[in-house]
Amino acid sequence: MAENYSHMQSQFRRILLEERVGNDFKEMRSKNETYNISLHHSVIDKLSNDTKKSEVDHVEAIVIVTLLVVIMIISLFGNLIVVVIVTKKRRMQTFTNWMILNLSIADLWVALLSIPLEIPMELNNKRWIYGKTFCSIFYPLQTSCVYGSVFTLVALSFSRFWAIVKPFNRQPNIFMAKVLIGFIWICSFIVVIPYMSVLNYSEDDNGVQHCGEKWTNTQKRTYTIALFLFQYVFPLTIICMAYIYIIRELCYRKKTENNNCKIKQLETKKVVKLLCIITMTFAICVLPYHIFALCVEFGALDEEKNNIISLICYIFLYTNSALNPVIYNIFNAEFRESFKELYRTVIIFIFYNIDSEKNIGFFSKRRRSCAPSSRTSKYSEDTFTKSRNSRFTQTFNKMASHSLITVDIDTCQ
Image 1: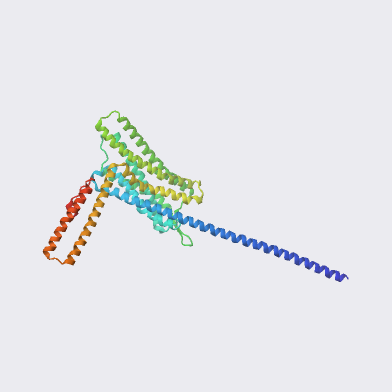
Image 2: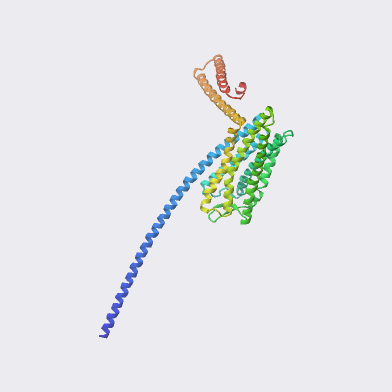
């Protein structure tokens, strides 16, 4: 009896144990299925988010590259035209125009160097792709272009100030402008030497290239503040003080001087207006970059926003190089007329070449098909030459009558 009772008790315990194990297994299985389902959903969500992010990045890259290409084309052709006008036209060769030429050279550096090299990096997820040697050259050259522009603006303001304060003294000439331009670029390259020494090139295990600055946080913050002061605050303060004095002096002299002096004052006002607009454009386009650099150094921005804001700041910086030729064309009558003259000359040259090629092709076909005698051939060529000259002369006179250009017809033949 006791044995049967103990046997039944052991069976009952075994049944309870099996039920408990079965329930635990079912519970574990259900939890595992729930975990697998949640893991599956999280993976799908992550892949979906990554896909959306890659699509956004792709659209963003297309928009940015398009903007950079447009800025590069406008800056390249506009500043090249300014260089051609100032160097080829004798009446445009003044101290002020040579300083404007130097601004165009700095803007051409941006159009030929900075933007074309920035576009491939933008298409390559903003990674450095130009190797070790160029790492220590690219960014310092960008900085030196900004220094070259701001030093030129200071020189322009000082020359206008000197012309107003000392009108009877010797004024800056073209030779002084060339010497000053050389001095400006020497100073622009000297001030970026410390920056060149801290740029460091490295590669990670995957072969990805990196080009960055290598110094302590204190040194980096000090350099950023110094860059803001010497590249923006101090120069613009000097420029503003000079132009305020010039405007005040012109307003005072307006009441006292005669008509001849008023004509000179009007010309001076136009030049000062142009230079003030150039300076304001520079200040507006460069300020976002300096604010962004200060915010990054002092931790006022999230890392996720850094890329977008930095791109906007660089686009502002590059836009300044494209706006300057437009400003010259709008606010300066001499540059505007020179732009028109150059445009008309190019159009006439293209028209003349196309017209000549068509006529030469037509008469050469007739000579081959008809096989005329030497006398007839000579007569045809003389007739063609006369008709070509007459036709081109009429067209040229019609187009040139509305412009200021003078071209010798004989030199075009």
